[in-house]
Amino acid sequence: MKLQRVLQYAQHLLMQSIEEGEIAVDGTAGNGHDTLFLSQLVGENGHVYAFDVQQQAVDATLNRLTEHRVTNTTVILDGHEKVANYIQQEIAGAVFNLGYLPGADHTIITQGNTTVVAIEQLLQLLKVGGIIVLVIYHGHEGGKKERDDVLQFVSSLSQKHVHVLRYEFINQKNDPPFIVALEKVKLFQK
Ligand code: SAH
Image 1: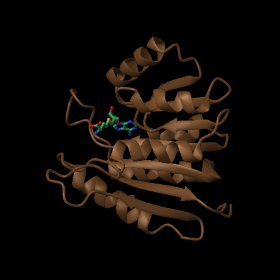
Image 2: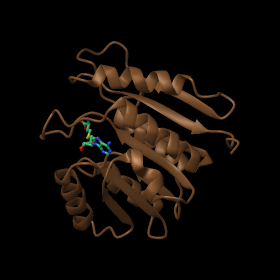
Image 3: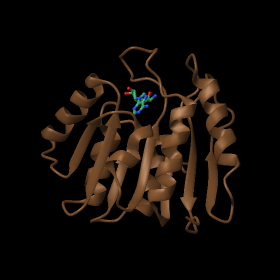
């Protein structure tokens, strides 16, 4: 296959922007797959902050990290919309898998308003050349509202400061997830 699948492409983008020794954020730890991936990208001199509002997700992520002997990661039981309370340093990249935790309560979902707040805060912290990757799941109850809220917000960002990409297979059934990626290309004025 020549066209990368959505999850592969998400990782490809993160590899483009994150280097060893830098700081990265997983906005939705979930089962910890992306947290582990980021921890490997930043290496032992870097650091990853992962957020989730569910204890079950925090525990699953911590277990995965322990299994892989990862020590460069902080897993935080709190919403990503509070990211600025926890991180003040420059970050190199961030990833969000929106929607619900597979195998858990389908009513605990990410929401457009809080996702947008998190993106706004992360764009401030992001280095120039850094990328925020959103994997947008929209097949579930509430998913279309979040998708539309997020798309409306990212479409309004100034192209002088942020390049916004949508990567999507458009002939697949059942609302497959798609990617929105934001590359910061110029500092915002304070
Ligand atoms: N849909 C994806 C997985 C998404 S997991 C897939 O199928 O692979 C999304 C995670 O976001 C869940 O674990 C959920 O608890 C978490 N979440 C929901 N609201 C959040 C918030 N405000 N801040 C951080 N995490 C949140």
